[in-house]
Amino acid sequence: QVQLVEAGGGSVQPGGSLRLSCTAFGFSFSAYTLDWYRQLPEKQRELVAQITGEGTTFYEDSVKGRFTISRDNAKNTVYLQMNSLKPEDTAVYYCNKPLPHLPWGPGTQVTVSS
Image: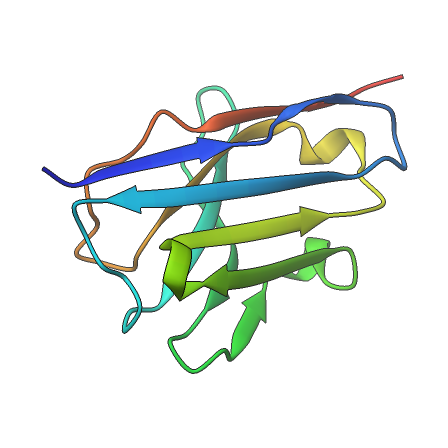
């Protein structure tokens, strides 16, 4: 059974940092492109960052220069280092691969507030 488990969220002040992780169980994603998404209440999930199997990265404009996506294929884990956090980064963060998606994990809540 495929399962994605996100972790590392929390509450931080503006300017703070968090490192999110997402581990896949029952699925080996070493050859796949992986994405981080975020979702605000009553809004659609939006793509935040992406990393290909070869390590090429993409970032949504609002997080460029602040977020870094990376992967450890041996651990079946993808990471999102988030620096200089802003209140507008507050959301639930999820990982997945591009369509067709795997079953979504529970996500991890990130709250940026003073």
